[in-house]
Amino acid sequence: MYKNPKTALQTVLEQLYDGKIYTKDSLAKATGYAKFTVSKCLKRLISEGQVTEGKSERLNTYQINPDLFHVATIEMYHIQRYSFYEFKSFNLHHEVVADDFIEDMDERLDALINEIKKFLEKDPLIKTLGISVTAPVNNGTVFPGAISYMDNMNLKALLEARFPIKAAIENDANAAVIGYISEHGDIDDAVLIYQPNNIDIGVGIIINKQLYKGRNGMTGELKYYHTNEMGNAVTYLKDSLQRVILLLNPEKVLIHSLVLDHLEFVHHLENIPEVMQPDVEVIKNIGTYFDAGLITLAIQAYLN
Image 1 (cartoon, rainbow, N blue to C red):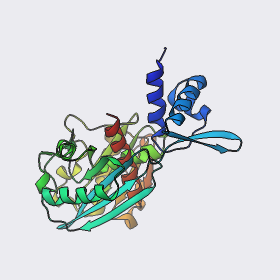
Image 2 (cartoon, one colour):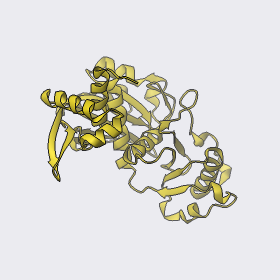
Image 3 (cartoon, rainbow, N blue to C red):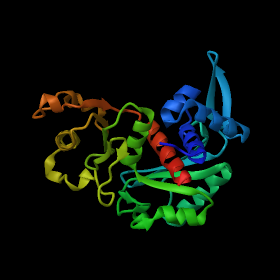
């Protein structure tokens, strides 16, 4: 099917937003365009300063201009009654430009807005922002969860009205599984089981490289299923893992849990047929995937 040059140009540029280094051949393969079309697009993008050209083993290489714009991320999380906010900004090569860590910030919207304002002033190149929250999210609206002042708030609309940026708001488990898929392009289906404390288990689901959120963004909130009678954190996790495998039959299951030293059972699951046993990976440093997922979501918001 014929694709017009404008569409090709935008497709090539958006592919390069992932920060990776491409040759003409690899970029043609990634975008589905002929090498001749990719060459024409690159020539224009280089002349406009949006893409840089280099060399590797006698091949010309291409990468997005890292300072075309910057991306900010905020990871919000809670430990017992305390709130933590991790701010970062990245260039388009996914290198950290600025960061800040705020403990126990006042649980008020105006306090959050003030901290975002100060952080944006640190890095004037920020054009888009990704935020992960410990609650379900649907089209930018935060459902009631751990952050009471955000209950039923369309945080995306509020931030875009207040600041000259685009914004993406997502549940923490969803953001992390998006980040994992963005870093492992050969995986189509993955489920992340995220257990930051004893009973609050959340699940992020990717099917055919697409985030599955269900009817209204509530998919994966297993904390509503568990009860105090079910036992300790390991029991919660084991039960959740078995249900996820039986319901979704995923290719890959990722686990991040506070009981990382007690996960021997994940590779020897009882009552799961051998043919359904997925590849299980325990993730210790989930922060890397929060970063990658929020960058991906923020860039998507910028493009839309």
